[in-house]
Length: 225
Ligand code: TYD
Image (spheres, rainbow, N blue to C red):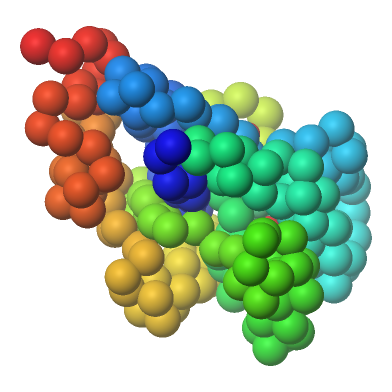
């Protein structure tokens, strides 16, 4: 049986990660892997309800952080850990780095408390009860906040986070950079200011250079040449 593989996707709103997650799912499926595609906030019926609150109801940063971690616990317990135990590839649109970036750097909430919650929520669920579950690889779509803001302006009605001013996203971007600096082996930085094809190539290269997908895996059509 294949070993489970946990990959998260991060970046400020407007960084353009969504299409690349689907393409990577196709590439892993083409390579014969079973893929669980999921997201945070959300990923379970309970956590999806919490997502609705987090994205649309007014609340303070502590409440935001607690809701994000409450949903994460349910998500890990019901979806992520079982999929990894079955040897699947779990592709998760955002995970804990988003809490550090948005609630920590963006909202100014105490990162030490976030670290405590991270330990509390992300341990005790795998076979190794001491393991602090975090992604094996985090694909970080890094884009200047002004470029992201232009992309968002052309998109649908904004949620509570997307409606924030650029200064907020500058702090969030700084939060991601700090998380990446703290764990450089886990983070694959993608320059996502270019066009979709260029970003797709970088994502596939990040996978190949880590030995996670072979040369023949195709990002766009999902077929091998
Ligand atoms: P996003 O991936 O942007 O969803 P969509 O593409 O459907 O808009 O995520 C939703 C928002 O949630 C995003 O603005 C970041 C925010 N968020 C937090 O503030 N804290 C968290 O812990 C997570 C996971 C997300």
